[in-house]
Image (cartoon, rainbow, N blue to C red; front, top):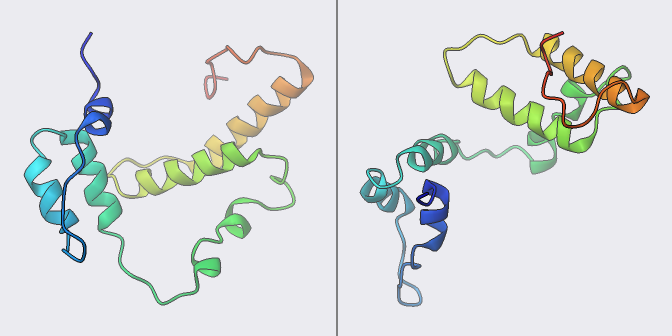
Length: 127
């Protein structure tokens, strides 16, 4: 089995440059986009984020919009995954009901806590 695109990217030799020499990351990804098709698409999403003058604390504080008194029991990894998924879905043409997904995740976590299902069960959202 061959290497994944990510493994190939991570194994690639680092670019050599002299101290003080600038590096154009956009140009580098443009040159490598044929080799790393998926990573290049992800990079375009990430590097397209505009510079903001808003303080970093308020810019990254989505907890008030995601976590409220009813959802405060969600684990940090679950919240992070939901926020990332929401950002990716907002960028696409797919319409997903995030509220319904949050309810499904909460239900799944409750069932895990109650011992109702094993962690290997992959039926989230099928209930």
